[in-house]
Image (tube, rainbow, N blue to C red; front, side):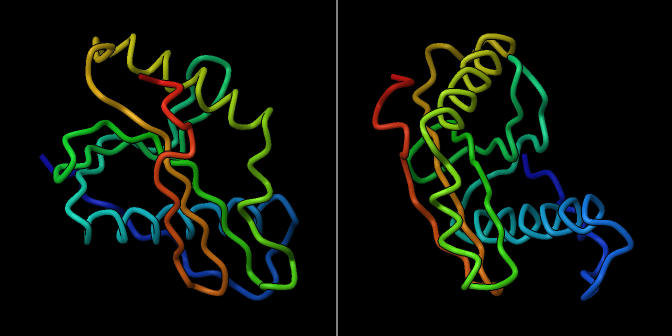
Amino acid sequence: MTVSVKQPLKLKKKASTSAQSKRKLGQYGEYRAAQFLLSLGFYILDRNVAIGGGELDLVAWDQPHQELVFIEVKTRRQSYSGDPSFAVNHRKLRAVIRAAKAYASRHFLNQVPCRIDLITIVLGRVQHYPNISWGVLK
């Protein structure tokens, strides 16, 4: 089962507000991340799920490894803005773990192997960091 991924609106150099610009950048990043995961044989199950007091950017099934994967996506326009992976601190990871556990519980997937991955996108370059949860969800 593959969910089609709708392409977001094109990014403009300047959006009318900072909030709109961030939202469009986030949508672009999630679209690029989903396309990247599909190319690796993942199935996209869900996106932008608000649950457990947090949000899951993408939920996917890693077909090659038979695991449920919760993906946090961080996108930056420029490389001088810093490495987006540094934006995932202990507090953010806890929130994603809490949301992932709530998602697994709601969908009766508690016994399914799962992990949390991070995908960063800078200047269109996609970097994938598998299993940033270090087995916390096992």
